[in-house]
Image (cartoon, rainbow, N blue to C red; front, side, top):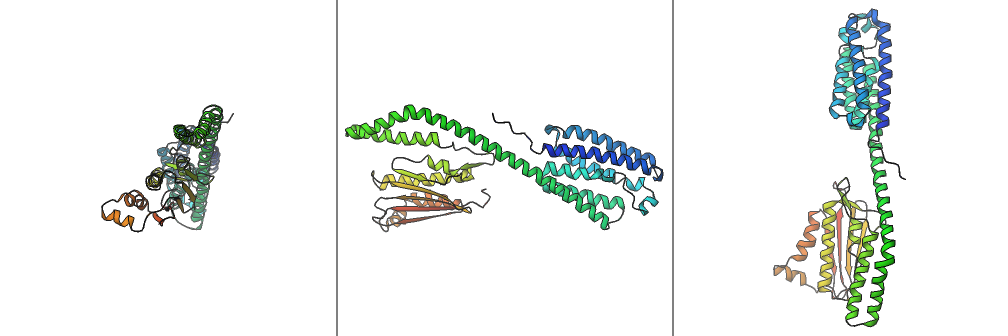
Length: 378
C-alpha cells in the first residue's frame, strides 16, 4: 500500500522553527536575569519578556498545525518581533549601549525571518530578514559592521529555510503526480488485459474474416480495424486532463488521433504544454488530417511526428497523397477560400509559432508546425 503524502511537506521545518523559538526564548530569559540590575527600566524588560513568552506560546500552537499557518499571522509575527526589539532603547542603559550589551530580545528575533521563509519561500524570508536587520539598526541606534553582519546572517538563514520549504513542496507535488500516474497506469493495464481478452479479440477476428470475405464484409472489416486501433489507444494512453499547473500532455492528445491510415510517433515522456496550446495544436493536426482525407484519396496514409526540442515543440503531418498543384493555394485565397490559412497558419501564428507547408505534385504534402515553449508555457 502506498503511504499518503503529507499535505504540507515543510512541516518538519515548522517544527524546527517552534523548537528554535522556545530555545531562543530560554536564552532571552537568561540574558534578562543576568543583566536585570543594569537596565534603566527593569519592569519594562520583564514586560517585554512576558510578551515574548506569550507570543512564543501562541505561535507554537498555531504553527504546529497546517491550518494555523496563516499568511497574516506570519506577517504579524515579523512586525511584532521588530516592535519588541525597538523597545530596547527604553530598556537598556547608556552603559549597556556603550559595551554593546545584547538587545532585550537577543537572538529570539532571528526566528521570525525563518517563519517567513517557511511560509512564503526564499524571497519572503529575505524580505523579513531585511526588516529585522533594519529594525536592529534602529534599536542599536547605529549601523555598523556588527549590524550588517547580523543582517546578512538573518537573510541567509531565512533564504536557506525558504529554499528548503519550496524544494520540499515541489518534490512532494512531483511525488504525488508520479503516484497518481502510477495508479492510473496500473488501472489502464488492468483494463487493457480485460479488453484484450474480450472486445479486442472479437474486433481482430471480424477484421481478419471480413478482409477474407471481401465485398460488404470488407467495409465492416475496415470499421472494425478502426475501432480496434481507437480502443487500443484509449486503454494505453493516459487521459488528457489539465494538471494542477493548468498544463496537458500533447503526446497523449496526439496519440488519440491514430487510425489504420494515420500513424502517430511521439517521445517516450510527457510533453506538457498549457492546455490552450495543446488544444490548438491538436486542432491544427486534425485540420491537416482532414485535408488529407478530403484531397489525398481514401488510400492515402498520413504520419504525425511530435518532437520536443526543449525550447519548442515541432509537429509534422505528412501524407503520401498526390500533393497540391502549383498555384492551387493562391487561387483558393483569391476566391476567398482561406480554410488552410486561417485554420492552420492562423492558429499557429496566434501561439507565436510558425507553420511551413512543403508540397509538390506527386510528392505528397507535409506541414511542419513549430511552437515555442519558453513563453510562460512551462
